Image (cartoon, rainbow, N blue to C red; front, side, top):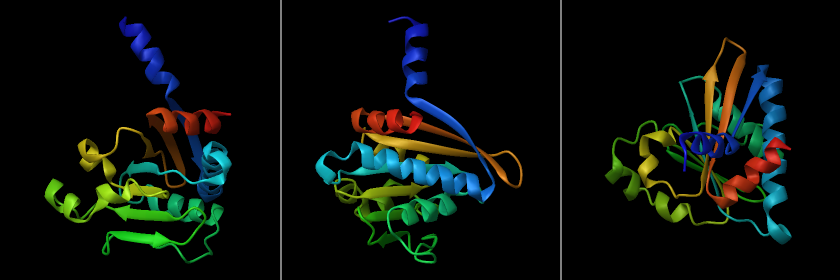
Length: 173
């Protein structure tokens, strides 16, 4: 396979958009939720794993709050799990929200039982997931949030696997 073919394949598994303010993030979160719903056959939830990466204050937790609202969480239900590491929300489907900022190594990651959580029929949003990329399932989504200025973000979504490819295709419309 030529280098150009590899680049084209990778580009087809990537989507970039821009959030303008909190409204832009909220709108994207609802679009993301719709894309996930569209890929669930017969309404049966499958595991959906999303790495949320970006600097402190980029909007990872705010995106999670908005996505959880799209799946039925009330305002104020979703908080940052920085100190507790894992929060679960009784949405439909359920959402598990992890913040790995304070997790130091692979051993700590494995001790938390995160690998078992990857198999649950839930949406799993993992802040700072790139720190443990080698421990992630092959099929997952990566969402990189780059801060452009105080209000604007450049967001790149990448899919890694067949189910994630379907979600990305739905998201791209």
